[in-house]
Image 1 (cartoon, rainbow over the protein chains, first blue to last red):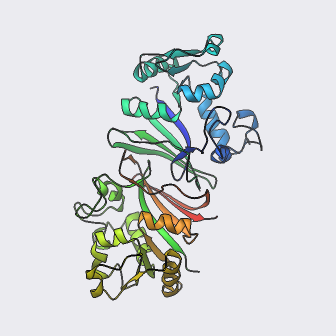
Image 2 (cartoon, one colour; image 1 turned 30 degrees about the vertical axis):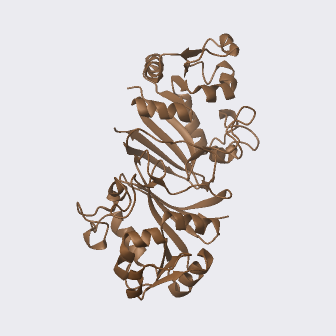
Image 3 (tube, rainbow over the protein chains, first blue to last red; image 1 turned 90 degrees about the horizontal axis):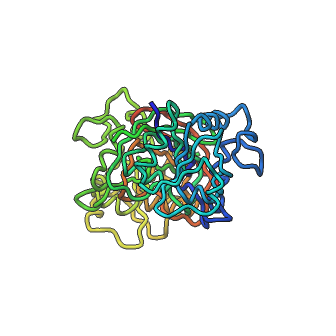
Length: 199
Length: 199
């Protein structure tokens, strides 16, 4: 069964972006600290080509690349210009947004803006993903997906650092949500915990 | 070497207390959800006597009971009337506060209010703890101890639940603080991660 999965690197105090997050500074100050665990080459981003093949970084990148669709928040998508139109392996990218897409989107056939809300966007993403999972991107989108009951799993990479400020993954939710621990991968660089959303 | 250690049960979204925290409702609504992992008998608090001897709850309670002094925030201490004057095994209890203690404190010889700040309170607690550790209690106190550089370790019991609201363990810090993963204990009820404060 296809599941929607959020992958997120988070500091122990809950931040997934540093201060001064915005266009030109995606992820904010110190953002790369949260992604060092990937083991990518210094100065490079966490792309598969630059990750140490022996580490858990490779394992998680492989997992991410096996997803059959991407559902991304608009801010996240726009900050990286929709990954140049292809997040990985030509899978479709869905962006829930009530505003019309920017002009650059017309040249990206894999990118679909969905105006009917997160539920519709997730249903479309799951339909095209087939037996593969849907990769969920973006804190706000994760939050709305959780609140709408359409987020199935959360893969947290808990990084041993206190950021002290920035943007948190979890802000106020309408109700308490129970999780189930599916898997823990324990490394010095991060504690990788995968949760299933129960209710 | 004696170390100061914070033990804290925290939801994945960073809450250590539910909404409506206050006298008469210590820990706020749903507080006990964060402490179910102790495995104590239904309705009882996490006291050693009520914990299943086979579980990690017993392991952590034993660890906590081996501390040689307690440093507690005033709110935490007052909400439970200073544990009736004895937190465990007659070890001294230090409460940093700029205001004079309440009238009940006079009858508790183990309780010392310290007006010279968190650094002085921690130095006194470490001095009496000898070769044992100092147990740190309270979110605000943990925060000021971190900011003052006198918190050595953080034992987080990460509970698989999103609280959605309440009181967070970590609020804004003056700077980024690096941690080191010392130990991970992986159970279905909680992911127990112990950190050393590096800088």
